[in-house]
Amino acid sequence: MSAADTRAQIVEAADRLFYERGFEATTFGDIASATGLSRGNFYYHFRTKDEILDAVIELRLVNTSAMLASWERTSPLPADRIRSFIEILIENRTKIMGHGCPVGTLCAELSKLDHPAAAASTGLFGLFRDWLKLQFAALGRADAADALAMHALMRSQGVATLATAFKDEAFIRREVADLKAWLDAQAPNLPEPPSLEERQCS
Image 1 (cartoon, helix red, strand yellow):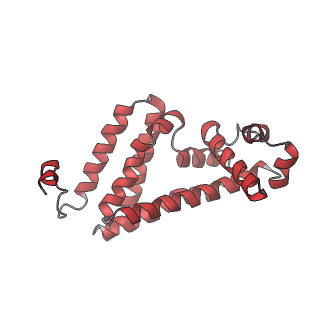
Image 2 (cartoon, rainbow, N blue to C red):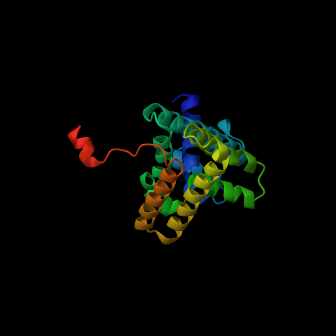
Image 3 (cartoon, rainbow, N blue to C red):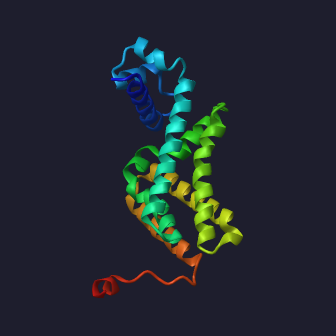
């Protein structure tokens, strides 16, 4: 295994453990055990847990940017792109019910710790905020695009937090449906999506 592959393995293991256990509760030993690496090999790549945290945040930024780009490639309409954002609550419902939102939980923990990387972790929310703002502007709501973007983020984070507390999948599905209805109301002059019957007849 190359040095780059080994480093990537460490970062991916740390990413998972920071999400499942939290940054503070995860030790060097936990990450080393998860990768099966010796301490010497491990320290060759990272000398401190903060260095690993920086790499994890960077990995999440890269992965989030790739996800947003994929939504833009596959969905020509801004409303459909925003729906893709909303639907990640359902797609990731098992993980969310188990451990919360990976962005929200990391930001909250680092903020409580007054950690130097707290601002960098908030950049993950910033990616979503800026992207949603662009989509709402393209939807014809440039007048309130940032406020709408923040509202969508707020709703999704609230759902994730309560889903973690109550482990209620039905609640997630109800809130996702309600959030989609809210989205539809933001551009009332847009044509409605075709019904199932209309799609079958076309």
